Image 1 (cartoon, helix red, strand yellow):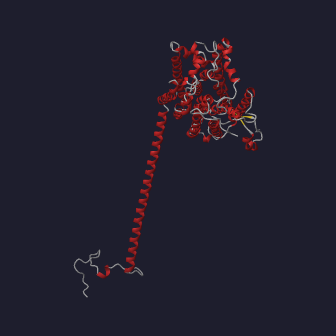
Image 2 (tube, helix red, strand yellow):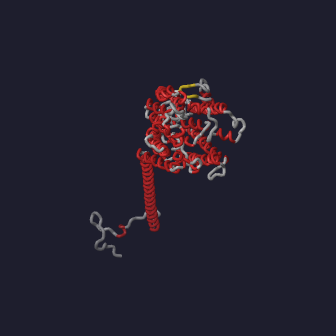
Image 3 (cartoon, helix red, strand yellow):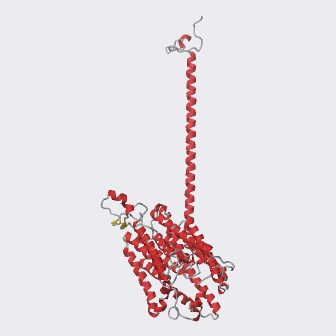
Length: 546
């Protein structure tokens, strides 16, 4: 074999050619050509797996990025929806919207009385069949206003002095009208205009008491179906408007102004005096009695300033309101009327004097329970909650419960428990009673066979339904007081928007009852049930300190 290298053969570093045999790479121990190919295959498989792992990781990262982007979009959408709702709530609670809603309510209320204004109030049974009865028109004649008699001085009036003054003032306005029938109609029209002003004022004051975030809930006053139906039965809207203005002034910490409005309200309709009890209890617990005494003193001074001149000039006429109510027996709408008509044992046969004692005792017991709740609740109740409970207790135990009394309760319900379901159930019961009382009065006036008349069965069903729904609302408010986490106002982070100086103020005193102290007494041997102890709660949504 020729061993000479051919042209182009590799050379060593010294320039000598390399032989073919010496250019081959020596194989390691046991290495063969097949094993080299296997190693290459393994490297290819590992490279493939690495590539797949990278692709899977990239796919996972892409999926996570997509989910994160979707979450951000969803959160953004939720935030946008929340922001949209907040803007809508602010607009719905604006003064312009609330005034417009109030005026719409007024128009609906005027429409509800249109049949009477057209002449039905001159026909005894027709005004009940049209469900449009009002005290305003007949009392223009019944209280001597049509003949120029001055309330209290020349004719006794069964209402407090501010209402009598309003009646006299409107009578002076319409006096130039010569036709007595037209004059009575105009007396009604001017009175309705005045009542509309107080409705608007009451709605705006309710919105202020609800706090900035919940002013829209005052729409539940402006557009309350039961209030619309009952708005112009009597002069109660004046008392409601003044009462809510007093609470708004208290919320604004204008205590003397709150007392002024409250004193006028009590001089219009006696129920606003019930606000003073809850106010005293909450101020006592919070150690804010100075604010209470300023308000109560201003209210008392205002009431005296309005009443004393009339009481001195016409004591007999001034006292008519108090004599009338003291001598009044069980009347339509009251639970006592149901007991009396159905001849219940004991409570169905009470004399007027005995009924006054029993009804007074029942109301006093309810007030005592409310006082214990106010002083011993784990978190200090909100002012509207306690006022609602007190006014509701008064209605539930009263000798008379007229359909227009719903005007008193509507703003208090809206502030005490702004939840739609309970409010709607109660409104339905009030509407049912509104129509039932007029249908029942058809039976009383014209007999059971007259068109539209109902008997005692349907009437008492409506009466008990109204009684039961107010009792239900009271129970729900009590539950909210005992479990503040269920109170939608406090769940939003607020304390007591209508509370004024009470809002966010720590408790000074809290009544510790045995049931609430059982566990605390084990840890603190000096803690005794039923004693006054200094509290350290701040009035907000957290348990009272033990």
